[in-house]
Each structure stands twice: as C-alpha cells, then as structure tokens.
Image (cartoon, rainbow, N blue to C red; front, side, top):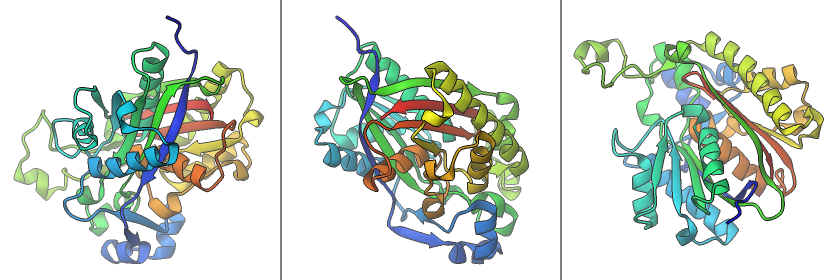
Length: 331
C-alpha cells in the first residue's frame, strides 16, 4: 500500500466567545489606559468566556464551523490532537472531552502541551500519522480559556493585558493534488522554562497558602526575555523551514505568526524583510489565544478571502518552554 507524500489541510474552523472585553474595561482593573495597552501589545479587545464554559466547549464550536464550511462529516474524523494550556480539568485530557462531545467513541485523543507552539507541534504529529497511513482524517485543535486564570490586579498587568479565549482547528488528510505541508521544524529550550510559566499547582509541590499569597498560581512572564528570544527564534525558524523546502522568502504568499504581541510580530517582519501586506494579524481583536492563535488566524483569513488555495503559507510560533516551531504549507 502506497502512502501519500504530503498531508493537506482539508478544512479550517474557528470560534470565539461572544463577550468582548475592551481595553477600557480591562484597564480599569489593571490601572492602564487604552492607549498604553495598544502601545505595548497592539491589542484593542479580546474575548472572554462566560462561567462554566471550558476549552473543549470552544473547540466543539470550532470543529462544527470547520465541518459546515467543508462538507466533511464528523464520522470521518479518526484521530484527535488537542493543543491547550488551559485544559478543562487537570486530567483527563481535553481531547477526551471533545471526543465525547463529538460523539466519536473509540478514536484516539491526544493532548499536546506546548502552549503557543502547540498547534504547530500537533500539525507535525498529524502530518506523520497521515503520511504513514495510520489515520486519514486527523483533527488538530487549539483551544484556550485563559480568562479564569489571570490576575486582574496592577501587579500582574504585563501578563493579564495580553490573553484572550478562543478556539481554532484544522482537519488534515492525504493530499491528492501536490499541495500540503512542505516542511516543518520544531524546537525547545527548557533552560528558559521559568521565564514564562505557571509555578503551582504542580506535582512537585503541594499548593500552600503562602503560594496563594505571593500569586504563584498566576502566570508569570519575563517580558523582555520573551521578546528578545521570540524575535530571534521565529526568524531562525522561518529560514530553517525555507531551506528545508528549498524555497525563498519571496516565494511566500502569506505569513501567519503566532499572535503573541504585535510588537514581536512587527520586529520579526522587519528582521526578515517581509512586506507588511503579506502578514495577517488579528491580535487587535482577540489578544493572545496561545494554542488557538494560528488556527484561528488561518480560519478567519480564509473566510475573509486573504487565504486561498494554492497559496504558499509560512506558519511560525514561539512561546512558553521556550518552544518554537515553523511549518510551510502549500494551501
């Protein structure tokens, strides 16, 4: 039995919760103005879920969006890869909860915990599954509910102004026309793991009152370190993937970077020498949705006519870990 040489994105979908949180609303809690938040991040607003909504609920809506737009049937999905840092529960994985909500008992469900790079890590896993003939329709999801884990006080404003809730997904399968994933590179450097992390709760330390008092249960970030490493690593990853695919920067139709911070994206774009017209962004509307960021961006770009079949698209992400990844796709 021959195996396909490439894996293609057959469908894209996304969903964001209806509640819009503006800079004015958030800034009132954090002691910041709309202008200051925009200057630091490029974000104007973000979406927050209502109480009781989990990341698998957002993922389910994104999958329904992908199925409706593509005409694929949910029964065709034979594997789920779920990327998230804000799982519904500590265990089991959110992939299992999504599988139950989709009504697909028995198929494998795998969670990926690579934060902002999680969706691209998931794409690479799916690519191998499809090319080896292990599965024919692999659902790769990125979904996040971060609003319930943020510290809305002025001491944590560097982190809390950035994040939002949302979901995006891609359904992958064998390519019949030569399009698909052309090259990918995955990286990590755990020496910087504590530059952007959530210390507790953890398996290595029981949660104590003193941890709550010092805010160790909220995410913390060394912003200058993240910025410096992100700009360098994203640029490197793009060139590595181009070299692997034997393509040039000018060949790329569209660049879709993880929507972490508009200043990072602009710095990477300048460093690469990429025309701004080739870069799609939606961070101003949704903030940083970590694992959901790239699939949400791609799905919306396709709906808006910015992403078309045949386009050569460069995807790149950087985040906690540090982890970073890049994928070149002929869409």
